[in-house]
Length: 121
Length: 110
Image (cartoon, rainbow over all chains, first blue to last red; front, side):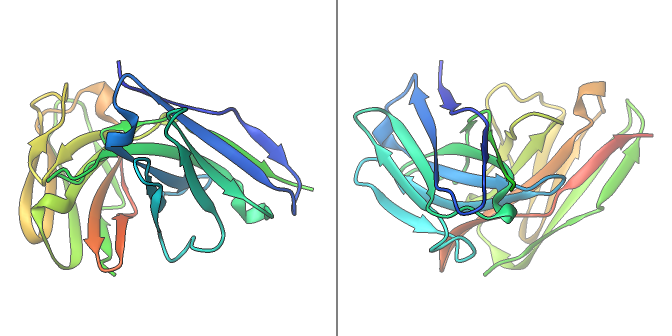
């Protein structure tokens, strides 16, 4: 069974750093790009960026470039999303989702359960 | 950057009725890059339709997608109670390379 399992909810203070994770199982992890999607409370979905675990190449949305870093450890079948200095406005649910590398169809066919990040003083 | 506009913002229907959701792109897009997702409260999104009209695995055939160019439609043929949720369209653009979501349509029980 294909699964993306994300790390648990986090409560942080402004200015703190954070790394959340997304572990894939049941498939060839290097063969699928991992995307990160933000959902602020009561709002829609926003694509943040993606990583190709096979070579760690990344693309970021201009809205998130420079604010977050996406990385992956293919030996651990895990992708990461990290912040060096959190802001209150980073409070949101974050989802990871996979997309088959090199596929004709652009689709996120499996999603993690989400990680809730709360940033508050 | 392509902008996706979904309409209506909220759609109120009864079980058994037919739902038609619209997604309009700010410029012509390839159907290869157009997908639809369903999100229920407290859950992650789920892929429904890819390539504008391909049904994802285990998606009931009452869900169908259509369209081309700038106008795309998600149709739910006969609403079941579990279909009331928020629906998003998604597009991939190559310049810059990024995915974009529409703002969503909330399908609620009338």
